[in-house]
Image (cartoon, helix red, strand yellow):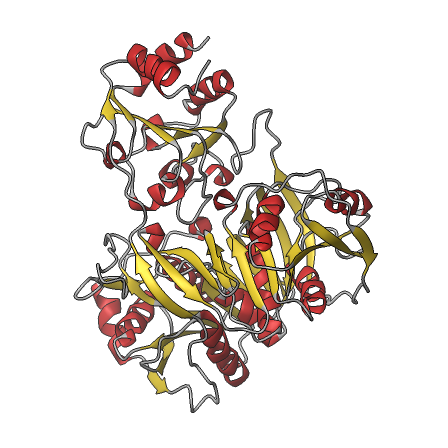
Length: 310
Length: 250
């Protein structure tokens, strides 16, 4: 029994969700190996080899493998999967894009977005926007699983001393090509693993007003999030969306500002340790999950809050 | 170009689903069922492509119980040209659905298959990716923009870090994200017209597919309940609580 974890990286640095996937894989019983697929990604392989709990790193380094295109990565993953009992990836947009494709190549039914490993073949996962938790048993010979990063602590990035091995690079399928990427690197923590999140809803009223949230986020060294309504209205970019079909977050502190608390939004943040809600509607559903609720006009409350936190 | 679109009949997104107290599943007796919201977006995109002259035919497909016909009629009312129901009472899971779609892809030879990125009941987000693998096609998931030209689909995808644009050779599978389009309202004349459009019924056996479920659900429970905390009267109290009680700010 051994688990192969698909590493997520940018060819220079391993991404944090991979460390949660390693922890989850460790609970499935047996050794944990990491597969790094990329272009000129030697640095990532070295980092992978130092992750605690990883005993082997496989590397597929090829000129067409540098942009996370599903077809190429899934082919490498499918090829490397033979002989493993489990194939694991973080349930990020990358993991969710690639893992099912590799699973289908093995005629194996994957299990998505698990929040707990109950046994080598049994997992808990949320359904219906997290309104129910299903315990699912998988009898497939190779179990393909994506894991919710917020449900598994990151494995320590140091302490491991794994052996690094190259695997054959398969030919480019030619099915797809990379065109461009628009990634805005903000001078603040990333939403996915942040300890504090300041999140805005439609109540903010404009993209300009979201700048108020930025000031608050600065004070708290927080990441920025948004409800679907705010993103749809153009007040915030899509990668700030928290919710059932956006990002799932579980920070120590989640500040929901001008967010009503639709089921789909709650699905993305109800595992936060402490939830604070600021909304002028006393009946907003968000208050049903907030540890501290402030019924107030956010345009008055925010400046006061920013000042008190200076 | 022919476009195949998948539509799933799911519990309506407004319904607050609850787990049954005996752990045997969720209580969805008599709840409102609707087309999966991402699939509405898929049908809308396909119809727009046809209206723009880039496609000649939009075929809507649904798999499941006989009532899926209603979902298909809605797809026809949005503008699909004909519909196919693969009827079965089996519990259908994504791998089986992907195989059913693969069989239909072989039969219909579409240049584009558009599916929703996930169904809001199982939240699996697997079918499109698996279909693409089975059919040997490229995939463009979580699409927020699709441009068809020169035998390629240029797709902008919503990913964790922002947006990325890729180009996939046709035939390909695209899965829709929320902001790809805003589906049109279905008008009464179109609902009436939809009744006359062809709807064919097939079975998994006719398509040569073993659609039996692989994964077994042992138990379904409610998530840990989060109770409401307290209301604070003003910002100053909020800050004091966060500082002294929750110890979350210095």
